[in-house]
Length: 158
Image 1 (tube, rainbow, N blue to C red):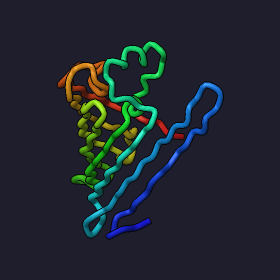
Image 2 (image 1 turned 90 degrees about the vertical axis):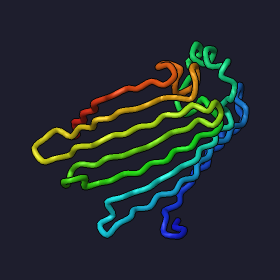
Image 3 (image 1 turned 90 degrees about the horizontal axis):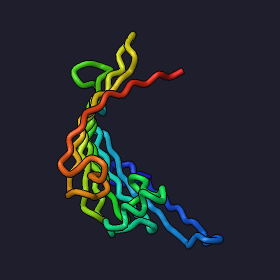
Image 4 (image 1 turned 30 degrees about the vertical axis):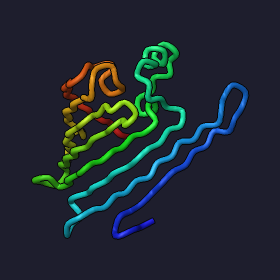
């Protein structure tokens, strides 16, 4: 739907009890809006609740061994926010500044990415990310606290 010019959306998923599974609920609520005469700027935010998540970081090693350490599903409460600018200098280049927070363990991930989709070039993205919030938490478990990483992503579409 629309509220005050924002696109508003939500989801609700319920897993009914079955065999060894208990009931679980996951839900999200988000907003998004584009600004400017040509809608070059977009802001978005989303909150996510996962009833099967945990706020006990000492359980992370056991989750990893069991194969249940799935990023963005480890914690109970998450938030996401982003600002995107399309047509950055020329058509086909965009930039996004985004952030994820796991409120259950207070870890976070900040990311700046630039996408290039220019005629006669293979589309690619460059990104830089910073993970923080303390060692051994969801977003720092594999990288360590205050970790900086860079990536190049190339996509081929048919």
